[in-house]
Length: 65
Image 1 (cartoon, rainbow, N blue to C red):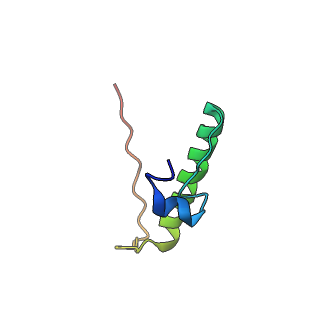
Image 2 (cartoon, rainbow, N blue to C red; image 1 turned 90 degrees about the vertical axis):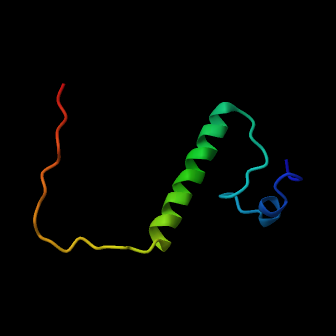
């Protein structure tokens, strides 16, 4: 696998490359950690395009059958 992802495997960053998964539970846990880390990176570096400036409250829509 390291040959297929040379740049990622060389970085040794556990958020971008995991080279050993021993069980389905470990895979789920690793994926969860990686997705949370990616989400946090987006929150910390993403540019806000438009800020909410109104004090008006908009009611949440409710779908009914």
